[in-house]
Amino acid sequence: QLQQPQQQQQQQQGPPPAPPQPLASRLMVSVAAGVGPGLLSVLVMYTTLLWDATGPGTLPSPACPQTDLFVVSSVHALCFSLLAVVHSVVAFDALRAWRTLRGKLQLGAVVLTHAAASAITLLNGDGGSCVASTLLQLALTAACCAYCAWLVRATYVVKLVNVR
Image 1 (cartoon, rainbow, N blue to C red):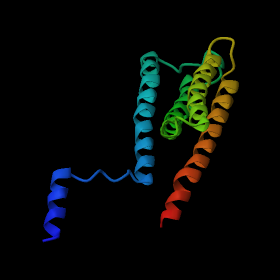
Image 2 (cartoon, rainbow, N blue to C red; image 1 turned 120 degrees about the horizontal axis):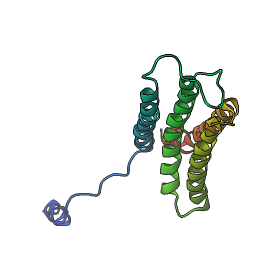
Image 3 (cartoon, one colour; image 1 turned 180 degrees about the horizontal axis):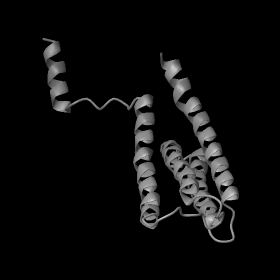
């Protein structure tokens, strides 16, 4: 008889609340959210190049006539696709901790590094240096990837190990 009132109370309250999302699932969602825009940016970058490549011969880079434009663009496309995934992971973490200073700084860093990566590509134009733009792009991407690796290790891996 004591169990019947408890069952009636549970039926009146509705379904139990959803369990909190596991840490590994949050990480997978943030990575998946970055892969789509990364692939899309590569497609956008290469669609314009493929149209220019319909003619005969190779297409030199305006900043470095001795270098093929496809080589320079492929390095930049790789960096932008990696940055899309890294920015997604960092932004997801920043939005989870939005009220803290760390969250605000992380979100600002995502915006600033994306703007810097876009500005670096301007060096590929006439009068610029494709070597400098490629090296700067690779350095920025490596720095962002290193921070993301540290963030994933500090936020997800350590907590997952402690849970077990």
